[in-house]
Image (cartoon, rainbow, N blue to C red):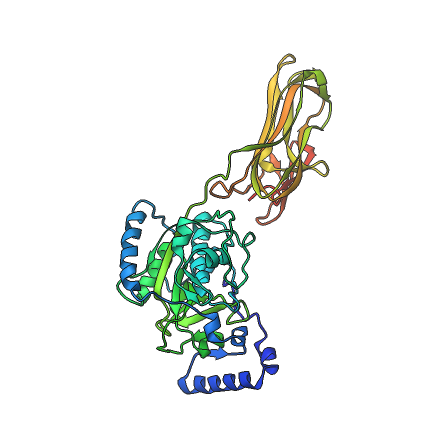
Length: 480
């Protein structure tokens, strides 16, 4: 699905309250559109509240093509051992959009500052990071504006070198102010590995070359020539065909051959275009000029090592015995952020009262009552002799959001008393993404019957041989 389909701003309402000057500008653009058969509509966008000079600012070095060749030679050497196939994108497809594959971050607003060079740089970088690490980030353009030396509110050029050498702070730690300030000392967890140009031999790469680069690297930072028509773009396929000089940087995220157009993400907020996006015809307004790509660093597997969150235990001196379904142990723990959690229950048990053989069912639950069990933790066991001591074990791993949780280790039995020599219930959390999602549970354990529909938060199930053992298998709290 598209990130944006219709404009988020009521352009008609804005135009009704516009000044005579704005209304005259729009009327002139509409007359021009009719004469030249433009395939897009104009409206009173929020970008029209500023002069073009204040909201653009991409300034290529005079010798940028020479520098581009040098950059690509370095990039080629660095890429030889680190290329990763992105997989989802095929350059021969009739259309593709990285927004459909969680490869495009939110539309931002550069405000009354010519920092488009920083926003386009970060747009490509955040896209690469999202695709490679399967995680959306919000990096700090203000960090790059203040500290990179690549430009100011009066303009600049691609700032990837700063992301490689220094990195980027989080937006929350270094918020955007739309004015160049003094560089701050903050943590900069996001870094890039290498960057380059789509084609260092020409100003504007071919459509085929841009498509291939989109598939190879993800969203691209590209230049475009912004005019008053571009500034007033509301919807449709922009095809002005201006030969003006490039002056603005945007993020190119996809294409559609049926429209003969690129999909670009701008940095003028959602009050411009189609909620901050535009369809722009191939080869119009010099779109794709100095197209560049960046490869983000892979996030570390773990920010730090496994850490013990909580545990509970009982020993032989506790003389724990259970003659009916019961909680063996419970533990409460708090996660400061989303983490992958491993919960392990382990103990030694015997028949305290009753004749052998006997059986039991055990598992880990997220609630004391009603019974809500993580289905992957269900275990069954049997005691074959009166003097036998066996291991009773259950475990489960899952991703949990930040918050406080209580986990219960339960045992189900009937017709005898079970005793525990000792037991522990331990929670270990790893504060990292671990490179992917845990496999979602698709079916109930063996010997259990019940209804199950993909997408449901829970699965109601009953053990065929034990109708009193009714459980609700929790998918929303503990599966990914």
